[in-house]
Length: 266
Image (cartoon, rainbow, N blue to C red; front, side):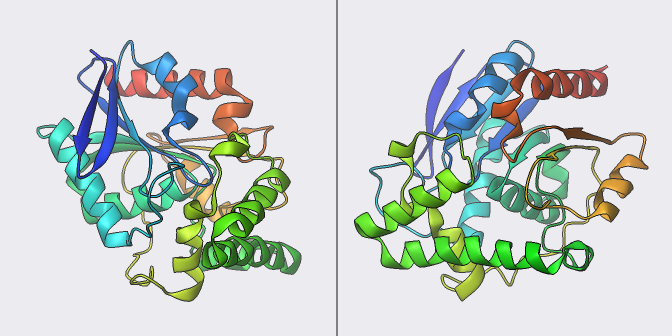
């Protein structure tokens, strides 16, 4: 039965039934609505859990959630909704960063990971794999969003929406606001505790990694994809899409998800 549960001041939507719980985390500039097509496809066999990251819902108070607070929130959700069994993580964009950090800190609470378009984006291999132009583009757009967070108000919102349009983000422009940008401010200025406590993502779990090929630059290194491809319990799939694969090719993503998760269940 579908239900909305209040956990740590966050509304958590629980849909579907099944022995396996899938926790879905979105990124910038999205909300839990990003996963609509995936929930519709998965909820007949799996229990789908999703929520909007703190500060990302329009109309909510402007708040920057620290890494520790975000991971505590995720642990509270997992402990409340799947106390006896580890969960599957379905992650995209900043959701990958938070989900990967959660898995590294609570390895027994995670059974499998689905990472969409973000791999080892903070690793030395990734940094070495990027060309100078790609590095400049990455720094430019992230610092623009960090600045929009600092400016705030209508100007910050306008800056954020302009960048979302340039990135071809599928989210409704009305729902996009500068309050979503605090991860970039934390990343580049070290505010709110910084992300220096983040640990390298060294996945030991079975992992499905899907990425879009039609982007100015990737968010994973060739070594990351090769390491996943070399394992029989992992799979790497390239899509002819941009960053938001689950919106641009929902049928392809849903087919891959169902195949991989059902094989694991079998």
